[in-house]
Image (cartoon, rainbow, N blue to C red; front, side):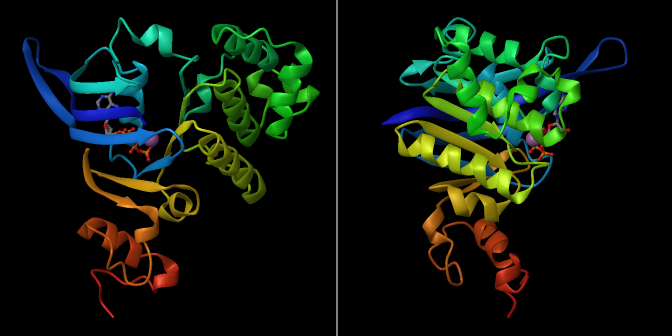
Length: 265
Ligand SMILES: Nc1ncnc2c1ncn2[C@@H]1O[C@H](COP(=O)(O)OP(=O)(O)OP(=O)(O)O)[C@@H](O)[C@H]1O
Ligand code: NI
């Protein structure tokens, strides 16, 4: 069953040139993809391609000069200013790319408690500590203010905060950046197991290798548009089963495919 769908979503930023002239800078064009329950969909693409903006459009955290058109649906409901508040934290949660989304003025455990409360959960402290333990975070991390955490610990704290409310959809924006291999695997396995338990997961990453190890399907984002949608299992051999040229080029550029460019032998 489809949990999240983007249909023909366009996004532009208004910029003032001079005093009165306003220019529209398009950044996303005709974005369309879907996430079903039980699957991990990876949004992948190079830096600056528009992946985070797609997540920000869903969660309503675009800057005020952003102009958005098109349809975003969550579980059959159109997502807009009126419907979004009831969804945030309860039905869908974001693991933001930047760890600066943690509140610098509150201890981490307090922020976890707020997230649980926002989701309508009456979790006691022991249950919240168990959530932290899933991400390798202990009582010291719980007591800490965000600036006392390492980058990797802060990222794991963001995962704990996003998942504590048991949302139906998790959007994880580069959730493993700055993590060592073990902690990265822990986060990605957790996302995969959430999907295996009927949740939907949108994994945003610049790494095709990461996407292929954990995702069921891959949506390629390039220059603000969807340059291809592929099943993860189509990335095999020489990529004959891939539908888009861009996917084939990325696949052939991976180290174990010999860094071939444009299909060169
Ligand atoms: N507030 C803004 N005003 C104008 N342009 C913006 C704004 N925010 C982002 N952009 C532009 O939109 C484009 C897409 O940015 P976005 O952060 O979504 O990329 P990304 O694919 O997530 O990249 P990365 O992998 O580096 O995180 C970039 O070219 C960026 O410069
Ligand atoms: Ni990003």
